[in-house]
Every structure is written in C-alpha cells, then in structure tokens.
Image 1 (cartoon, rainbow, N blue to C red):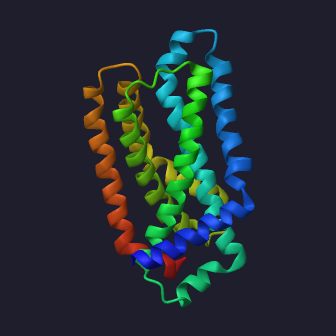
Image 2 (image 1 turned 90 degrees about the vertical axis):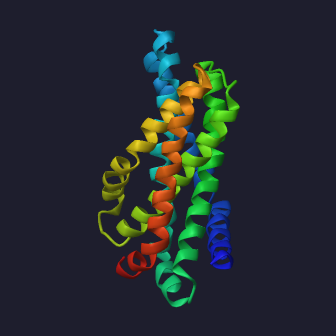
Length: 222
C-alpha cells in the first residue's frame, strides 16, 4: 500500500509542479480573500483581531475546494481514473497517495496564509506548539474528506458546483475546531485549545479510516 501511495502522490505532485495551478491561481485567491476581509473589517481593528483565526480557516477551506477540484478534474479530462482502475494499484494506496499530495499542497498554502495574517492582521503566533499540530490535524482531515468527495463527484456533469455543496458542510467541524484551537494559540491560554485539537484528530482519523475502506468502491462507481 505504501509503495502505491508513494507512486500516486509523486504523480499528483509532479502534475502540480508542472502546471503550477496552486501557486499561480489557488494561492493568489487565498491571499485575496484575506486582503478583502482585512479591507472589510479594518475600521475596527478589535473585530479583525478577534476574527483572525476564523478568517484564516475560511480562506483555507475555500482554497481546499479549488485544490480538490483541480486534482480530480485533471484525471477526468485525461482518463487517469480508468488507468488507475486497470493499474492493479491498491485502492487504499491510491487514497493515501491522493491525501498525501493534497495535504502537502494545503500545508504550503497554510504557511503562506499564516504569513499573510501576520502581515495583514498583525497576528501574534507565539503559541506555535498548538498551532502546528492544529494545522497538521486539520489538513489531514480536509485532505481525506476532500479526496473522498472529490472522487465521488468527479464523474458528475455538475462536479464544479456539487463538490462545494458536498464538502463544505462535512468539513464544518474542522472550521469550528481549528478556529477555536487557533484562537487559543494566538491570544488565549494554549490549554484551552488542546481539546479542540483532539476533535480535529478524531475527525481526521474517521475520514482516513472511511477512505481506506470505501475508496475502492467509490473509484469503481465514479
């Protein structure tokens, strides 16, 4: 499974490096969302400071939808899914590889957005011991859920519009828990955020387990 996962992840990352969609389109979109929020709330710096964590994760989730759409749209256009079905690769390995590639892209995006909130929102990132594992757990959960719903919607004619409707409600717990953990890491006692980090870990584990057991069926049906 791990060998197959490495092959799939390497393939997805090479496609991204060649196309540079995440760098040229998704990242500027995410930064633009942060800038627009800053313009909208700038007259009241107190509200902007309190909303930093939530705005950060809203930008991350919107960008994740674009990244998932891009990852599976390429496969639909080039017939890669049929090749995956016939390749003999372990479906669980395919799922793990898709999640790993998507998570790697999201982590780079989150680092860029983290720099953005420091510059635009004057955020204090002193609680790195909580912020880093929060990003890792939330990213894994979003990548796992995105891979499942991405393959589920990939064969539909309205995949561009149905994916956000399917994915965003599912990852709402990530938005809530990650926002609360980030608020604790940015402004409050870090002890308040560890229970929210636990919720993120449970969410990520649930979707990783679901993907490992059902991805073969979704791949066949898509």
